Image 1 (tube, rainbow, N blue to C red):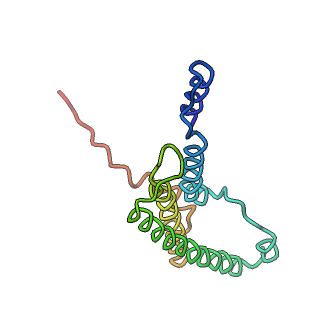
Image 2 (cartoon, helix red, strand yellow):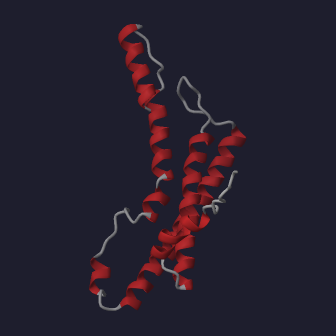
Length: 160
């Protein structure tokens, strides 16, 4: 985006012309970035959460866990429906050859596919969080231990 904006500034100031698609492409990239960072934000617990319900049951751990699992299940359903909708929209746009109504005539299925990818990754992260909760595995344990476990063990080579 920054590169395109700088190109647009240079074209307008020095050559009195434009790419005429800056707003369109920035919009596509903003949507793609937003959807593709959902999973990361959820996994790092930096999404906005409303704690007033959880705070009411702070002394009852089982109720808090049940509420969180219910919220995850509902979110799995909503995100799953969005995935189905996006998939149908992408197929229609691809089959019809739908393009944007700008000079670029950019294929509309490409930005939608980028958003779909983000939704799928978010759904998978939600599903893994729910699966861990049902199995009784702490996500804090996974965040601390799994990355190190996934690294290959280094082999010491003795030369001599």
